[in-house]
Length: 235
Ligand code: ATP
Image (cartoon, rainbow, N blue to C red; front, top):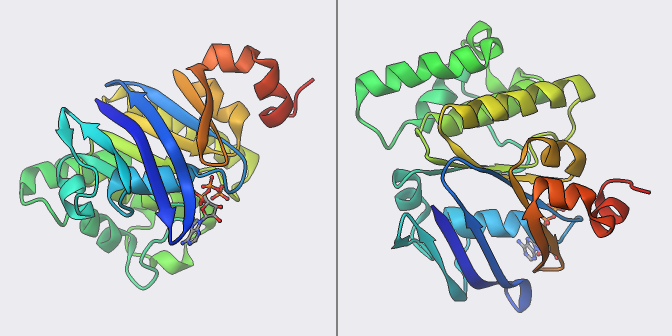
């Protein structure tokens, strides 16, 4: 479905991604694991069109999307939930969700997706008239995910959805990620919480200082000494 091929991404003179390649097959949950500053968010931004790779190629459903405008990429079916949520604080929950569908004009489909999002996140239904800035951190994460789903993506990019949430809420969010995947959405998940991420992922890539240093099935990485020592608090 998605093939990232040897991309280099820079911030000014600083090279944040160095020849990164990765593949995602339809229906998978793939996770990116790596320390702070390794380049995980940068990779998601390059895929969703927020950053333009200087070299390399990104193919999505056999079309090149590298360097295309973010709106075009959303229209083609890739939604990005950025780190830190970024909901529109002065708008209600419902208005934020509406915005997620702003590139669509299939009214019936949009109505169906509102129902689906409220089914996945009953909390958002209860709070649909509430200003988003007054939601708890967990509720804002749900809203950011719900808003991304309103674009009806085929591929959902999630950047650290568990950040700052209580262990119970982290479990809830991960269960919902699995549910979203089961309804046919492919997922690329960036996580610091490698244990949780590997527990739901099919495959994983480990990124260190802008390079993919290891990849494999979730089971393989769970069993790898290198991964256990560095990322799973392991012995
Ligand atoms: P984190 O989990 O801390 O977000 P990350 O793996 O997502 O880490 P990135 O945010 O992709 O890491 O950052 C990769 C590198 O690029 C880091 O060295 C970071 O300092 C640098 N970087 C990120 N954003 C910018 C920016 N806007 N300008 C300059 N350098 C940046």
